[in-house]
Amino acid sequence: MGLNIKPLADRVLIEPAAAETKTASGIIIPDNAKEKPQKGTVVAAGPGTKDEPITVKVGDTVLYGKYAGTELKLEGSDYLIMRESDILAIV
Image (cartoon, rainbow, N blue to C red):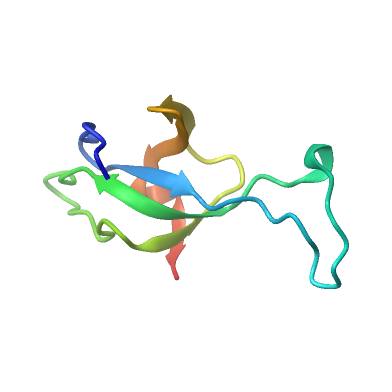
C-alpha cells in the first residue's frame, strides 16, 4: 500500500472489510440496511507506548467494536484509526 501515514503511540490504522451484500440464505441486502463492518485489516501501526508495545502487526485481520475508532478518507479509500485497546481480537 502506498499510504504515507504513520500512526503515533498505540494507534492503529485499519482498512474495514467490505460490508456483506447477501445473507447466508442468498437474500440481497439493500444499501440502507447494511451494517457497519466490525472486521478489518491492519494497514499501519504505531510503535506503542513505553509500558505497552504494539501486539498487532501490518496485515493482521482484526475484530473491533462497532463504534470504535475515527473514520478517515485517504486517497479515495475509507480507513479507521483507533487505539490498540479498541481491538477485540486477531482473527
